[in-house]
Length: 271
Image (cartoon, rainbow, N blue to C red):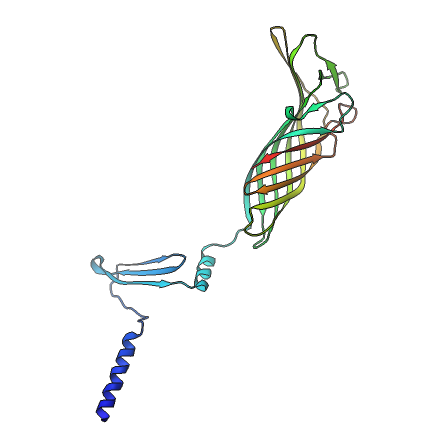
């Protein structure tokens, strides 16, 4: 009876040992070890002499291990670079008497780069950059802009029988946007942007074109007395990568007594 009990105990221990998973494997003279990690599992393959697989094991990863692996692979970088391209139209406001500007003859184009800073797990983004901005303000009246002796811009009639008449004021600027963006949720495709855009106006001129008989006339008037620095207040509503924007400049584009008084309102799309 004693011998029978001892044999049963030994048999039970052997069965338990056989059911336990081996956690230590020794492979001598291994040629290479291959470890492949996915989002859900990690596979270890040991190749022995002659290219034969000596050991192959796949282990599922729990959420804790997956977080550790992801954290080890990539460190969060709050900085990002964005390229911007905007196309819109300008609507001059509070214009001087006699000046009528046509919105769809007054395009705006800007292009540039921005650096964005988003703190980890935050819904807010702060950005600054540099844009090149071109604005054209086209007249809708039957008169053209020209310059007189004191470099002031005034209105003058076109020659009699002139056709295809266009007269535009052109301003080129280097612009510095200082913007704040608020997302509505971490996985939301919608965001709202607000902030000033400082314009350093570098070049201004008037371009007038008209046809007189069989001749096409193109007159460029330089030396426009524009304000060197103006500030736009910008707002934008973004869905994914496409934004509807609006910019309002409460400052006069042209210097005092040097041309028409007006503020600028522009709107359009930017990517």
